[in-house]
Amino acid sequence: MKIYYDFHIHSCLSPCGDNEMTPNNIVNFAKIMGYDAIALTDHNTALNCPAVAKLAEKKGITFIPGMELCTSEEVHVVCLFYELDNALKFSEYVKSTTPTIKNKPSIFGEQLICDENDNVIGQEEALLVTASGISTEKVVKKVEEYGGICYPAHIDRSSFSILSNLGTIDEYFGFKCAEIFDIEKENELKERHPYLKNMKILSDSDAHYLENMRLPEQVIDVPENTTKAILDYLNK
Image 1: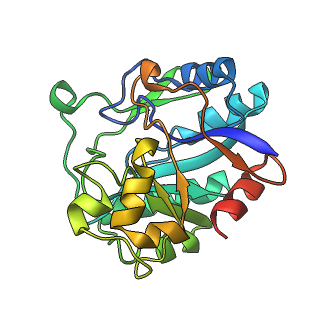
Image 2 (image 1 turned 90 degrees about the horizontal axis):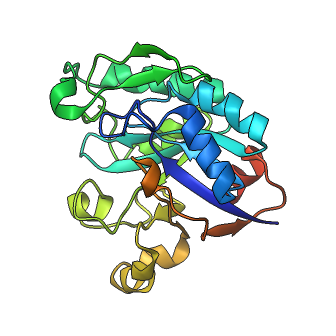
Image 3 (image 1 turned 60 degrees about the vertical axis):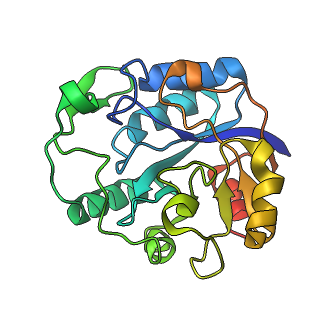
């Protein structure tokens, strides 16, 4: 079955995410626009995934708990997990590897943790956009240890991408998918980096504001609309 997806969305927990990116707003916008499956991928944390998971279930949207990890080389990698508990455990692990730099909300933005009613139940004090201690070389195996899959984010961008920071993408890293923000660049990138022809290509919104959430256009074809079926497909 063909499903409309967006596997790269930020909430108000990401310091660069708007405070209006609350769990309810994200899920309700996704429902109104017609998404079948979404993932929440805040920078270096999964702490708003529990609230979004509950709301997505009520709205009949398949939810994949996730994170946008910043590797030690400052390469952004989308990490998606089969189980919420594993995403939260990975979140704790990432925090343990990341230098503690106190967030300055006036500069970077607030980092709000919400419940399913959009009540603010806490704030993350450590800045979440800091590079973790996990290298791009080892990230695939480390995410697998926590029951997840991962792929390089927005490889067509000039910053925080595997191509901009490391200059290449090939079998050495072990990725099976890649995300291209501007899907019109797909053919050009495949010509310049032939290994992409062996990979599944995704295109997500990377939404930090509600207005950044795209109308559904990208689809994948999976046996059923479940987290397991989707991640099994991406991990082939």
